[in-house]
Length: 190
Image (tube, rainbow, N blue to C red; front, side, top):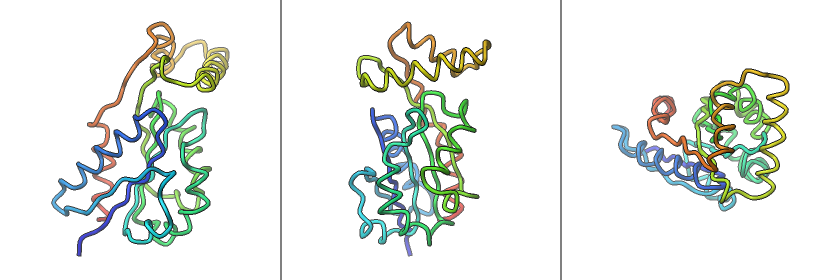
């Protein structure tokens, strides 16, 4: 019997959706050849989720909030909970793994510790284009970066790249290769 995998994503500027699309293509290419579908978090229904055996939940991070998480928590997590052992998570943010501790907390808070504990969680890098992001996101980005710099006069590489991005207006760090460890973890429960 073919395993059915549903990738549910919340994407604001397209980076998370791109990773979800790549992940679906790469999972279909595995020897197990699962049936894979992608769906935006805003459109998934409990009935749709019921039909799947395994799940990947992806959210774009903006200031510790994962896009699509509130809707999923209310309507989909009860369907996924019994299939917890066949669930994985990833986030997409500007800093990716540079913010691992904060993003791990955001995933647990957004999707409940009961569902996320012991499950694969990955943090991938997206990008920023200041011409495309909303005023609210521009404002939200400035506060945390300033606060971080006040507390840490020696920025890590992710924060340094964020600062450089303010000068250039955009940066993109999306990389399909960073999905490989996630694919390996998902393959274990197919």
